[in-house]
Image (cartoon, rainbow, N blue to C red; front, side, top):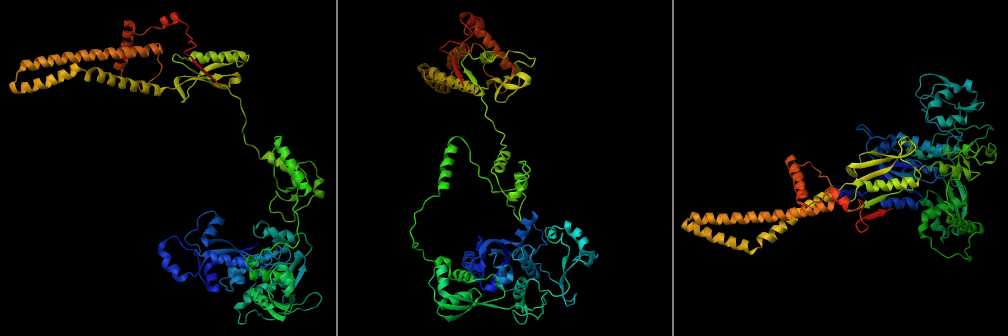
Length: 622
């Protein structure tokens, strides 16, 4: 359906009402109360009652930005609010501002009407073409005829050079606006040209005259023009037509029960003059702008629009029927379900396709002979009706490049207090041996190559390189920085707990503390240095004994950790400690081994196998 754009001030001026959308800002509330008499929703309902549809409410700047693809500049036209309204295709008298509001504002609206008539009733200029000329620069009489292209010579619009019709075809072949219309007459022997009378398309001419004659002294009138046709007959322009309709027939068609007076009043609202002849007969005068009215059914449609289809009362049909599916549809539904149950996927494709899809791509050039062709296709993908389902399925496969595939992978994890890199390495060798893949770096086997991966522990990661230097997998040890933090935290908590239990809660410490407090007070009074020195000596001895006890406890704790991890480095600190502390740590470890707290690796190997026992090891395989 055609869509027309109307400036809001023009619409408000003609209708005598101000339609507006309430803004979100509270600063305009007072202005809205004064000026706004109706809302946008009411205008939408008004359009719906007359068979129109409000498409959207936008602005001129927004439309320009959408067409150009960039923001409008400051010198653009004013940002007026624009109502875009969809009108029926047969109501070409409403495809401009004047047809709806009877208020001419600028020349652009006339051009808009001309373009809409070209696209609709003129069938994209294949039937009729309208031109606007300045009568001050040309003189009559005008003659419309056909002539050979070489005999037609004139200066086109916005040009300074004279062209022939053939040269003009080549000149406008690069024009994006006129290029689609050149094939209409390009291959014709003669081209139409205006030399005399301009009365070719009386329907389009009447519509243009009626819309813009209201700005003459007498509306709906124009200076008389004598139009001479090939057969020397004459026709009076701007002549109204009369049609006799039956009230009962219209009520039957639309389902209302209206009398003749009410029906005549409703037709008046639709710009149709109706006079009551009898109770069942109306004489309707059709204006020259309503060439869409051809039959009594068109009058019934206008009556229904004016009365309102929402007022139509729902009622049951007089005949009773039993709903039943067509056998073909029922069979198709059953077959569709069974095919889907077997694992096949249903594809819903378009009924239209390109000419190449059914001919060249299927290697069947004769398929175009029996195909149904679209006379005016919008795109090259929808030129003919499909004669086979195969082109649609092939297009579906062409667009189904998702790049995904299913892979079967193997992963294994080993967890134990004495877990080592060699455990998982042995598992890899066993799997490769079962697959008959031998260790080799010649390109026909596999080998291990060191790599770096942030997921795993630094220096404990290797890639599994297979045939043709392809990476098959990774051997690595998971990073255990959290284990270091947990050990340090547990050690600190254990030290504080032992100090509290062994020192601060002992009776000797409490007794010495109270004695120290008493002697301190006594020394303050007597200032006896001997008693003070003795007390300090006792406290020093107690502190030394306490620190020795705490040292033994820490030594036992470290020995326990050393026996658990077999003297190996199980984790790496996230920072580099001071060299002195590193040396102290190594000396402490050697001291533990010398004292017998930490057994060596050789002793562990002599006592048992390097592999963990069944009770100690935990294997996880997936």
